[in-house]
Length: 237
Image (cartoon, rainbow, N blue to C red):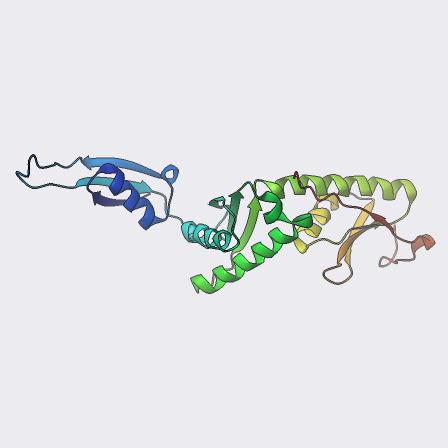
């Protein structure tokens, strides 16, 4: 817990100074009024400022600066939104945007959101100029959580289709982040194997029946050509 004192003509002014300097919001700090200050009467005597003490948690990754980067980007593209950054771990930063323009920020199958996330990561790496390898996840109104649940459902459903038909299934092209969700969801299934296939931006996940006592996966296994399963974009808009 860190502590810092601020002063102003009023408690509100001192608080605003503190929040601006620390780049935090009121719900991220605890404020204690040390001295309410005094105001002169009819010009007699001297005014004394209000003094406050601000308690706040040390944020190792300067989350306020991450929020500032996002706010600047939103301003440039003409979108209003409330930005909140949280530290998931020492190197993982989750930034969520609450906005009425979710469709603009997310884009088709999260494409715009992925691009924004890449830009933010690039800006952050140049801005902080340190050796920390930060993993930044940019989200809009919980889209990624909804999308993750959708992908897990598709993975399980596709695995059942593979078992039933004995035919491999190719999912729609996905980002590396989304392909990883598919792989992890099915890694405990002893009958199924998954493999990333193709080149970006068309790289996808192929789901196939595990062959017992056999060598590497063969695309022509049993002569079956891969079928394509359409992936729901998980966008609630």
